[in-house]
Image: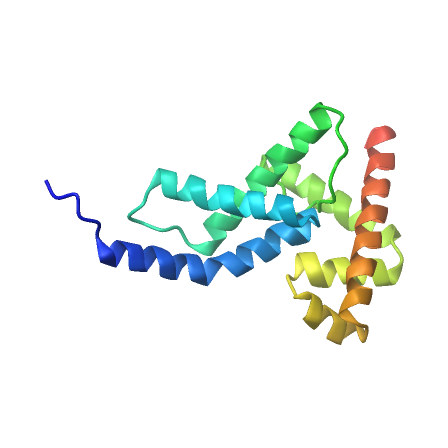
Length: 169
């Protein structure tokens, strides 16, 4: 049995990684708003996919789903230990279809309570997946202004979610 590595497989892996890593990192960073956490989640998503199968590389939507699940696991861990919760977004949940619908409806209702610019920046950056630059162009603001606006919008959305959660949903 040969111990020689398959160069084609390595090339395919590198190509797959290069085609997906920027999008995946951008996705995780948009949800977490923390560079180190986003890097950890991105790395763990690739590790889990490669641990499962090194011959067939999953498409980007599957990687994104793995990353989202890792973020939800980390969020649950933070809640369970009463640690400080990092910035996150309540995008599509990974549980039962009924729970997905309820969560999506709740987020839509809470976003209606936000100032217009807050809901607009969250929709463009997180829901539609635009880059900070693209969002800045659409909102006619600087990229730094978008970063601050997104941070405040996520804070406000989290506060509204916590108030709703404390009041029983």
